[in-house]
Length: 113
Length: 112
Image (tube, rainbow over the protein chains, first blue to last red):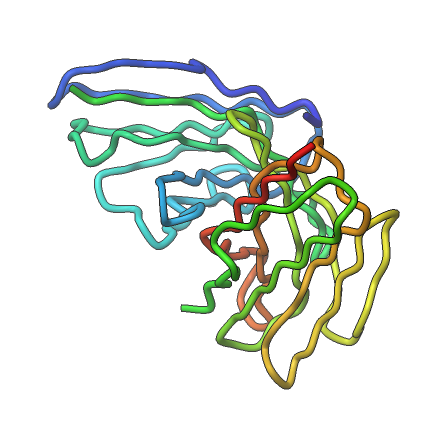
């Protein structure tokens, strides 16, 4: 799995609470991504980072924020979790090589009750 | 959106048969990649084809790309039960950063 660790792997939280998911990589890849996967939608990009402190929004960024203070760590925060954010979240990384492949973490299953 | 769309959504075949999955997309791309996802796991990269390539092989995998039709196909020959998984295409944009967009995937079941 190319040295990508997501934590936690599973989490159940209550509506309205803040939640932070962590992605840690040991590959020194420049690009990092957060996706969510829901039935019938494939993977949808939430936020991505193209370097330390350089982040941008994806197609489904509402309700989410990210931070990248170190190359190896990319944090995804749900400021106030809602039931619609129940999903499986995947982190991915990619080197700076143009058109290179992405490496994925094992995913975090988040349930908001 | 330049989202890739895989077709069919689900495919069931017998072991030893070939499996073909298709991907269509909407805008110009730099490359197209195929990924496999086993149940409960992350995606694993299978193969990448660049926009100036028409066909690429990797083991039992054959990928074609037709940029005039904005489509790609993934052929898995002599399928095995272990090929049972979901397969996703991802398009790498021609004119925007390093992001790529995934389609909803094809669920392949290979029956023993």
